[in-house]
Length: 279
Image 1 (cartoon, one colour):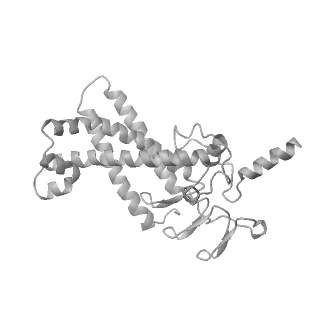
Image 2: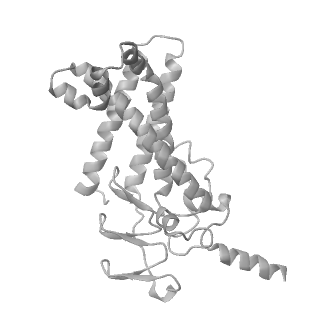
Image 3: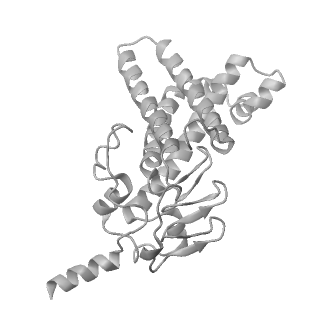
């Protein structure tokens, strides 16, 4: 997304995601500040750090370009695996696929992230993965803080009222069955639990993909190990950068990605190289 331009396809989902993140953040800060204790400062620092990483990685993800826009695709270097995209009207390298939501081809495309309105690709995968990691930790922490709300509901008896308050808080608010305050706490508590399960599932899946050096598309297509699996350490460098062990600390930690998103080393090429070296 160019500076000074506002793409509705990106802005709207990002704004909706920011609303959810803000509601959970404000509720967590409220729960911490209204409960006095020796651990209050520690909880505030931990919450601030997790929110900083979630929002920071989201910003870097949206700002980072993983498309072929601005990339010089020299026709003279075309080789095996290159294809022609009729939508973009150009030849594209291996692992590059067209996204009809972004309306452009994306280098080493993984999938289109609906919540952030952009594709996960070669240059921004690091920020997507770290958003999942810190989002999972933050929502686990928020769910733990909201456990008292669930315990109070269970203490009162898990009846019709409690069930629908947790399952459909909007309906309970519209019908006047609960106060606005009760609705907000129930809505945020639901968001924490659902968001935690969502992030955990995606983080687990992408941890497996990252370990094997594969994208979502390649994994479900069934061709993974014979293609780009270079070993877990090399895979981490290819996806997260040369300082992959530091990217978890902050989205502003510099970690150069060794590849260019056009040429990729295959596992077969590596094995053949070592075989020829042994001869």
